Amino acid sequence: MKNQSTLTPTMPEQNTQAVPDLSIVLVCWNNKAYLEPCLESLYHSELSSSFDVVVVDNGSTDGSQTMLAEKYPNILVIQNHHNVGLGKASNQGIEVTQGRYILLLNNDTLVNGPSFDAMVDYLDSNPQVGAVGGKLINPDGTVQSCYNNFPSLIEEFLIATQLGELLWTGYPANITDTKMRSVDWMGSACLMIRRTALDQVGLLDEEYFIYGDEADIQYRLKKAGWQMVYLPQATTIHYGGRSMNRWSRRKMVYRGHMLFYKKNYGGFWTVILRLMMAMLSLIKLLIWGTAYLIPEWRNRAQKELRSNADVVRLCWNLA
Image (cartoon, rainbow, N blue to C red; front, side, top):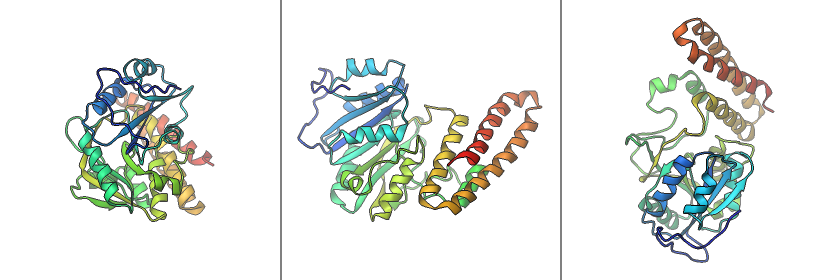
């Protein structure tokens, strides 16, 4: 672990105080190519709110630690020997911070200070709000997920069959809303949470390795009476999906959904979800097994067969 307080000469001076407005927590795993420009955008973002930064490295082997030591010696780095997962690593970062607000920030983002200041100002002015998030923008200027409803079986069916994407752009996430509103949950690519709200409901559930933990924490916040608010004027560029491919991600996403059901909806609905996911994945196995016989589809079919077989095993084995 490294904790140095001297800034490099090329970086703007931070406004320091006993308790900063904002503690920014980033988790890194072999993503140096994105982490470095993310930090550069942060330290040159004209952020007025006082802040500190913690990077939790999950055993990167791409030179991330050397880059941090050389260019950002002011940043507190927590070094894990292996990938402990996003939820646990985020908690490690949160636990060593003192800021009034916690900003969970993906390392594959480019940020701007006025957006963060707007989020801080909104939380200052609205004590009933437990978390705020903003608009995530692709590098090409198109809009990503804004917010989501808490999961339902109908939604899970529409996602798994991809029927939802045919009916609504960006399903299940809302990507077109331009109005500030109270919502169920927002992604943790850039999510600011009130520390006192976290103190009340507890930290992220570390059983979620990745995916599902942000919906779970906001479900707990909402049950405790806190509001989650989407601020469209707060924008962040988010590259997204840089840690794993779509076929590896499918199993982890479904695992997160099943854990969310198990924890928050009870055993009966969890069993129904697992049966539905298993049956849909078996149908996909039949479809892609046929596609494998077509030479030009073989490479894609191999990946789909492996991915859907993983989901079937997950549905059977997840405790």
